[in-house]
Image (cartoon, one colour):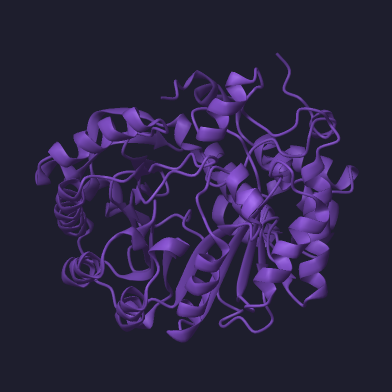
Length: 452
């Protein structure tokens, strides 16, 4: 079967898949035998690592969410999880040997679901077991409006957190109800005010477009509500209705496919994206990717784009991923509550020695590493640097990935010296370009994956 050209894919709706990471976790499989972390990391540079901790707990499960998360866990389960996460961190740090972390993120789930005492324990275990100084490096946390309070935020600020990311999704109560998200606007406004009062330097707000009943006017109204708080970053996410999520189950009952809001080429999300992008550019924000917009007053604008998907990433916690150059590994992946609970139970039953091994993941050959670099660079401004690519892989990207030439033919990218940069039209099609660059082998593994 011949792979479709990019021109073929452009005839489909523009939202094919979010290239959040490559390869996607549905391409992971059990590693037999399990591989010692000490050997995996021995050949890697370990002086500038990214530490990511995953807290898979939430107050509720939003209808669109397909992340590894469990709503309303038993208190004893949360306590057991924190103990296990410390065991994993201790075993991993020992396996790394000499190392230094230069970025940190606490994600989920909802890390702010933890109470202040539990959050304090997380920061203590990080400084106790890892070579890291949170006050001297970029450090972020994800929160939800109903879990924000001044005590937790003071604790985060004092620990060294300088970026708070909060999913709002919409300021319209009708739209958040359509997302199966029990959220009230006054709670959102109070949470934002609390974050601002505590003086954390960077506030990121997430909004979603493509919600049932949403119009261009209502989407722009949500953006204006966000702009009233002058967030340093705003992310605009297209809604994907995925299998086994709450919205996916609703769509399935209606006989719809459960992958996208619309199946026809005239996808309403594109017009919403264009309206939202125009509003943010008019407000002085700079577009960094299809999703990310940065304010002119944002600090450290010369710093690398905030990203949890880079090589040199060390993930701790059930659901967290780790990335060496040659292997990506994690725990297993699930979406339905039953499968998430089973995977979590398995994680809680592990002994500390087992955390010194990777037993689930995917090896990356040279072709996959090239594709990963191209996807990550191309979909974010300033773009794919051909000189940097040659330094990494010993040849020009247009030789090793000749399909990239199609981007120029279709007006989706331009060359500026050594830089290949997406045009505005290309950036709007990022969720088509990313999947187009997936290898046939990875695409087959993703198709064969049985999602629970």
